Amino acid sequence: MQDSREFLERLLEEPGPSGFESRPARVWRAEAETFSEKVWSDVHGNSFAEMGVDRRPRLMLAGHVDEIGLQITHVDEKGFLYVDGIGGWDPQVLIGQRVRVMGSEGDVPGVVGKKPIHLIKPDDRKKVTEITDIWVDLGAGSADEVRDLGVRVGDALVLAAGFLRLAGDRIASRAIDNRAGAYVVLEALRLLSDAPAEQAGVVAVATVQEEIGFTGGGARSSAFALAPDVALVVDVTFSTDVPDANKKELGEHEIGKGPVLSRGSAMHPLIFDRLVEVAEKEDIPYSIQAAPRASRTDADGIFLVRSGVPTGLISIPNRYMHSPNEIVSVEDLVRASRLLAGFARSLRSDSSFVQT
Image 1 (cartoon, rainbow, N blue to C red):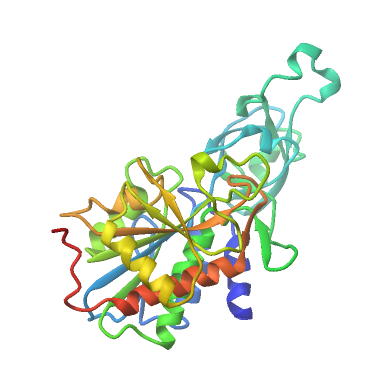
Image 2: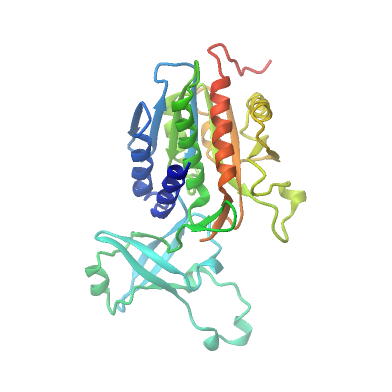
């Protein structure tokens, strides 16, 4: 398990906002090649690892490998960078942060700048900061110096917040949404390489562009290519064990208390029932989350592909989502991987999810 945690740390450290996922995707595929039967990628940047190539039914395990980030929209004559968000940001989180710009010659460090509070008029101090109110300072003195650093308009950047071990089995990092899911699906495949499913073939997929996937992102294109019989999606969800969490709206989900199983929306009821059955058989604790509308995950991009894919959603409770310091429990990741592997082993060639 120690090697797996080192893999998780490597995966989280690599910057890879939506549309710029190649670096964490390469880390994912390199790990997959150590035990998978087949590993490949596609034109969109989705990464695939397969066990049981000729077995059926085919189970797709999807976790998106992208993260939220920023993109340079303008470089002024003094060398200051202006940016826009890749994915959903609370701009207040960005103020005063350090960043890593993914330049053509390597990562370039910088800091987020904003007018000091001393210079802000009292009436304006309570106003919410917008992304248009901030800039990125590389220490350069001109646009030419920025260009010499290998940085140009269109380059992506992430906050410079690395992997951090906290008390117990808790970890903090940027990009846990959703490198954690990409990690879990590959760890499930690792478990199946040691104790295979008797009949099912399994393809783990590190999908791309979920954070901006208004049309289904890489999940839709990869599901179309694979034509799976069943799909399970792994993402993160809001942990409600923090102050001011609204359990009436979100449900009760605590980090360290197991994965979260979703009902409604894109999730197939028979898949949910089987996940519950496997969790209880394997003594895996879980909670249930209602999704009466869209799940806002890759499940939305998969379940209507072709003639329909019976789809389930397993989520990891996550504190401080879309921040540079998201927190999860490693044991929850382990449990989720066990649940996926157990589900795969439960499938038979005659398993049917047609609703009657």
